[in-house]
Length: 149
Image 1 (cartoon, rainbow, N blue to C red):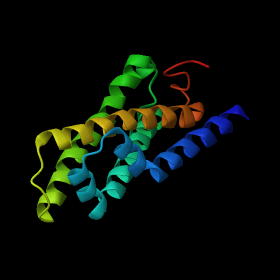
Image 2: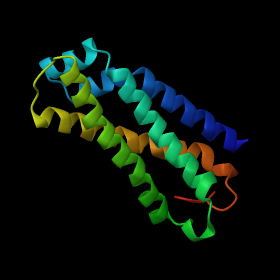
Image 3: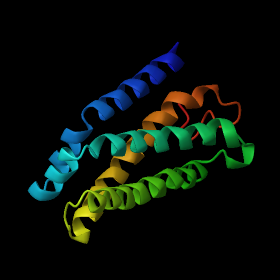
């Protein structure tokens, strides 16, 4: 029974993040021109989908793709989680910059893209943790990683 509770909590947190993504990002970092350009051109939705997708995909691959006794330590979990962080960082900077350039918005300074990327990476790690605690219970070898409960 507790396995399903953690899964439901993780799915609920992820859904809430997807629903409130624009508000969270704009609360953490708001620049009127940059945030308006992202909002007006609909770039928050692809960023939130990529953020959620990378976190859940990497967690799923760790617990069910790799699923190795040799990788059953918290530092392996954290190292694998960095794949999601790097993918999110690359997507946040390059996709956003390419889309805004193609749409004729900007030019924006590098710190706008960097701040947007940093907040996406922070939220991606939180989603990765939620995804890990949601799906780890059915892994045959890594079900106690990162923290045994």
